Structure formats: structure tokens, C-alpha cells
Length: 293
Length: 312
Image (cartoon, rainbow over all chains, first blue to last red; front, side, top):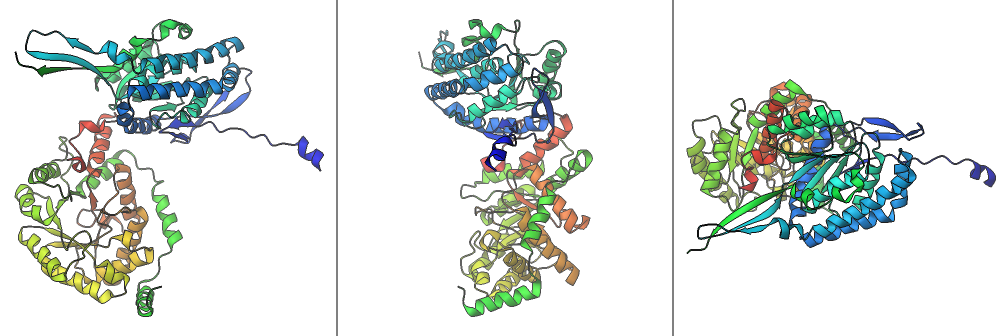
């Protein structure tokens, strides 16, 4: 009896779900696509998100936006640091997932540790970028003239296929550090690390809706990223025709579009982080305050 | 435990109008949310929902300026001329004269809540005087609340007499009777109250779910119980009563679900603002947003539309 019990165990497999508005959901369309691991073996059915999932995610991000932007920079720093802690604690699982989808074990380990370090880098910036980007401006009139930064609102992120974790983290972290909220499309070929990242986001004190992670086909979602008027900026690692389509679609809603430059693999280097990536997704507000002569 | 005569009164009325199958209703309405409405049907639904909206502001902080914004928005909800005006503006009695001066002569009606809205807990004489005052100021429609205390204690004659009294005070104005379903506790009670109200109403009057001032408002299930009561009453008497769900309908998608319920329960004859209304303030902006999305193909940002009336 007990022998039979130990021999046969029905495998318990996980249903990968995307992280939208602080909840784990299937695609609104109920469609999925199959993903295989590096050996070609079936791995799982990943949600094939559509423009409606993107719409729902933007609604969730817009709802979370004001609360996130109102937090003190110090608190945003703490929360980003907490996210790094969550990833560090589950780093073995992430390394395993990255290796399973084609990264060499050593690259996977490096990718996870750099991802953690990158979050800590931006956690550090969260209460410091304002001092460097804001300014008091000399003017030739009786005004006190100063410039401060404001978050843009909801920002779309389109991550590359390669470096499915590090690239995603490197693109999302500088955007949320300044109080924006994000709707990100994960790697199409290796979406599972992003799904794991969603599980870590959920336990990181980051309010639901601040980061929303979608999986699916880039070509299907890209036009909606471009035209959705509620997205104030798009940060995309795409090339060629996709760039043209994003720029053209974004023109109507006067959306800021920024592309990732440089070769794949640069994500590991220190040049892939820094103040300029925060500056790319803030608005500068200049105030003329009359002071009399 | 209710007194014996109260229970008996409720039981007798229930025998007369029939019980509601709770599980049946909830299962039925769950199906309405699974219909796929696209393209031209969706456009038609969105435009129809706009034309059925009673654009509402019922707050202590209402000012003449705010009423003016509301009325302008009611007349011309969006710069796209294919978007129709809404059905009515719904305001407190003190604002009726002002609203009438702004929308008078157009297709937009002025509706006024009266009868000590939202609780109704004042002398009947006072409530009637409020109705007469609003009608004299130019209200085309009156939204009254029923006496829930009398209803729950089984004094149905009093509930019906009061509605009949208000009908008389309305004169030519249409009447909408608010059942305040959240205070009626059960679907059976909603059905009973619907029949009591319809017994006193004229063709073209409405029954309405809620005041929008309690935490539970119009749901598809409450709406379904009431429109089935309207259907049964119509088949019995030939008198067509209208329906107005109010409160809690915030998205265009929700409003389409309600329209599907109407089409599949009462038929096309009720898909007109003469017989179906939405009491709402934030719904209109979402309808406009979806219409604009259909027109341009791009999802719209909410701040590209004039303020929703709730945020004035």
C-alpha cells in the first residue's frame, strides 16, 4: 500500500499567470501560447495577452499612479530595496529559470545578481535624483525661477527577448523610481522569468498596479502600446520596422518614445544604469514665482 | 421576528405576484456579461446608452455654476456631433428653475428628486409640497422615494396611497418611483414593491432601483427582478412602465450588459429613453471615451474629456 503510494505521484505543474493590478490573472482572451525550454521539451502555457489586457493594465497603472507618486522618495527607495531583497532570497529559482531557457549557468547567475544590484542602484537614486535634476534658474526679472521634476504617469516598457530578467528589471526600475507606473511586455521567447518576477513584485511592498507585467506576442501588442493615449511614454528595446511603427503610432498622442541603444549583453555593464535613465521619464516643471524688485 | 399580521400581509402579496427564483435570476444575469457586442452593435449600444443617461448631481455642495456645467454637458456631451444629448439632468428641487432655464426648449428633460430624498422620512404633506414645488419650477420628471418603513412593516396600502398621491401632484410630469432596493433586503421584496408601485403608476412612468446614496446600488440582478416584474405587469394589464437603474453603473461595458438584459427580457420596445434610463454621473465620460476609441481606434486617456460630473 505505502509502496504504491511512493511510486506514483501525479505531477503538480504551475499555471503561469501575468501580474496586473496586484493580481495574478490569465489573459482576458483566455488565449495561451506554448513555451518550450532549451531542450525543446514543453514547459508551459503562457498567457497570450491582447490589447485588452494592455488596456486593463493601463487602467490599473493609472489608478496606482497618484498614490505611488505621492509616496516620499525615501519610501520609494525602501520599497525598491525590498524588491531587491525578495529577488535575492529567490535567486536560485530565477537562475534555474534563466538556465532552463537557454542562458549558460554562469550567465544566469550573473544576470540575477546584477538585477538585484541594479534595483539597489535605483533604490539609492530614488531620493537623490531630484537634487541633481531640479534647479534654481537665474532670470533677468524679479522672479524666483525654479525647475522641479514630476513623474510622467503611465509608461509602457517593451523588453527584449534576450536577458529576459536583467533587461526587464533595468528598464522598469528607473521608470518607477521617480513615481511613474509601468506596463511592461516581457520577453516573447523566454517569458517565464518575468512571471517569476511578478511573484516577487507581489511580495515586495510595491503597491499593486505600479508594475504590471504582460506576456504575449510583441507584434500583436506593439500597435496598442504606440497608440494608447493614456501611456505617456514608451521605452522599447525594438529594432527596424517596429521602431518606425512605434514612432508613427505615438505621434497622435504626443508620446515620448525612447529606444534601447547598444548591443545585447550591454545590460551587464554599469553603463546600463544611472541618472540619465531616470531623467528620460520625468517631466520638468518650471515655475516663475514673483518676488518683487 | 416580524409581527404576525406583517408576515401575513407579505405572504398574501407574495402569493399574488409570485416569488423570485434567486439562483435562477443570478445565473441568468451572469450570462448577460458573456455576450460579445462589437463594432456597429457596440456603437449603437454606446450611443443609445448616452441618450438614456440621466446625468445626475445630488450633493450638498451643488451650486448654480455646477448645474450649468452639468446642463452644458447634457446638451453636448462631446464635440463629435454624432453623440446625442443625454435624456435628462437630475438635480435637487432648489436647482430645477436654474436647470430649466439652461436646457428648456431642448430634448433634455429636467428631472428632480423630491419627497425628502433620499430617506423619505418626513410628513407626507411636506413631501407632496416638495413635488408640487418642483413641478411648478418646471421639472419634467420627478424621482420619488417610497416609504420603506411602511413597506417593510406590511402597510402596503399606505405605500400605494402615497405613490398615488405623488402621481396626482406630478400633473403632467413623469414620475420615477425609487424602491431603494438595498433597503428591501430580498428579491421577493423588490418584486413586491415593484408591483405595488406599478399599480399606482401611469403608462410612461418609471420604477427605479436606488437613490445612489447607499452602498449597494443597481446590480444586474436587481435590474432583472424589476424588469421581469415590468414584463409580467405589462402582459397582465397592457400598461408599459419604464425602468431606471441608478447608482454604481460606472463603465460603458456595464451599461451594455444592462441593455442586453433589457433587450432579452422586455424586447426592443424598451430600448428607448422613453422607457429605460441610467441614473449616473461618471458613466457618461466612460461612454464618451469608448465612443472616441471606436472612432479613432486608439484607447483614450480619461483626462482628454471634460470633467465627469462627480468631480465638479
